[in-house]
Image 1 (spheres, rainbow, N blue to C red):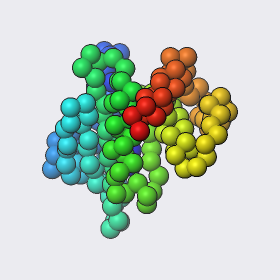
Image 2: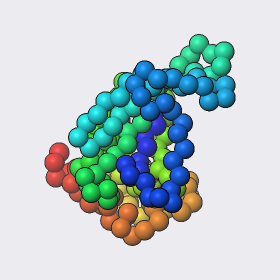
Image 3: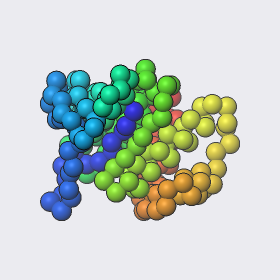
Image 4: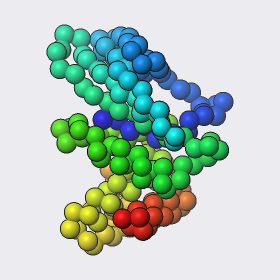
Length: 168
């Protein structure tokens, strides 16, 4: 499963590389990979793409769910929006059978923010009640250099976790 975390509207300077057909039922080949957009589910704040990816000559398929978070203002999503996205991914039937990939345009800021929120929530609710935010942040940065680039992203992580605890 892939979670795509980025702005719905890209800046003029950003480049969007299309790596799947944008319409439901559409398919194409990218080199040796066959990519089929099986369905598109539009929600208020998300568009969820369900893709089938088949390597040439392979009968196994790979299910990808791309969740494009969008806000009404084109600015950063709310904590509620991110928590909803994590719930969509966590309740997907295919998550238990394989890894989840999270990405954004740069691959470090928004993606790292979502990953850290998810890791903290997993630890809090799997009887690992002691959560050292600074140590978890350091561990994530050791795995991906420059992850969570700004103080605001770290504060967003904390706000999201607090919001989740307040709702649960």
